[in-house]
Amino acid sequence: MSLSSSSSAQVQSLLRLDTRASKRSNTLLEQSVARPRRDKVSLSAFAFIFGEIIRYSQNRVLGIQDLESKLNDLGKRVGVRVFELTMWREKTVHRESRVLQTLVFINTVVWRALFDKQADSLERSTESEDEYMITDNEPAVLKYISVPKEMSSFSPGAFISGIVEAIAECCLCPARVTSHVVPADGLPLRTVILLKFDKEVMEREKRLEAGK
Amino acid sequence: MSATYYFAIVGTNDSPLYEAEFGIQRDENKYLNQFIVHAALDLVDDAQFTNNACFLKTVDRYNDWNVSAYVTPSNIRLMLLFESKADEVVRAFFMECHELYLKTLMNPFYEPNTPIQSLAFDSKVHALAKKHLLL
Image 1: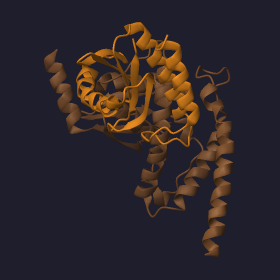
Image 2: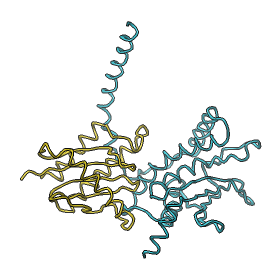
Image 3: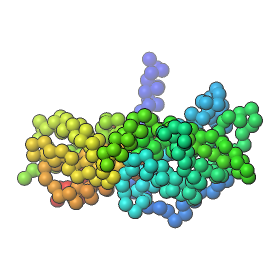
Image 4: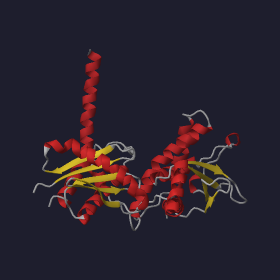
């Protein structure tokens, strides 16, 4: 009996702390959403925290697929927020609902908002109709991550692919997004983000095209 | 001339994240409001693919109620049930609510698609309603 009463006293004190904190929570809703003047984060600070994120995830997974999916989940949480914020800061707030426009938007505006440059290319795969590829020749995020040879199939671009997957889902074009490292001459970190759109999306695209 | 409004934020899986009522309430309408908004979600889905704008004006009418919808870029629906109000007024209200939702989303401890329980958000929405809707 004594054990439960002491734990309920702890719960009470925690609840009181909670209400005290919520009196200050107004500040989130009063901050401005406009683009701040200093909107760049130092690459070294980000590389430090990203490396630590990977090490933290590695301790909690069993295998490369799990590690990639954990990074993918983290990217998804970032992707939703980045997308909404970027859309709000555009000149006209609108929505994207078609595949091609979503891809072009990700390529230009989102990449510029995140990495200060446009993605290097957007291609459609010749083998299957529903696969598209976004290429980044030197993703700043991965510049300081080195992958050992025994894990050569692991691509830390899984974080970026999570961001893209969240944006595709927001635009009503859900897709399976994976990232692959495809080195070319002089560009050892060249990463390709592969998007495979769901069947319903492609069918809907065909219907909308035919309806026009 | 009792103007009553019912405002709801509906998530991507059609569950309400936030509900609020403004103006003078008549008790028997509480559950009816939810039904009307839920039924209007279908019409919002139809309009979503042909219209690229965020503000879809009045999507549905039920007796003398109008249902107006605003879809955010990440597919969250803001729905307002009202009797008669100018489009511009409703649009201004929706845009300010969108900004509030955006700020709530920026909180890393807020999981998207979960109910919004912040008291500050609630009081801000009521203040906006007083400013735009109940003049």
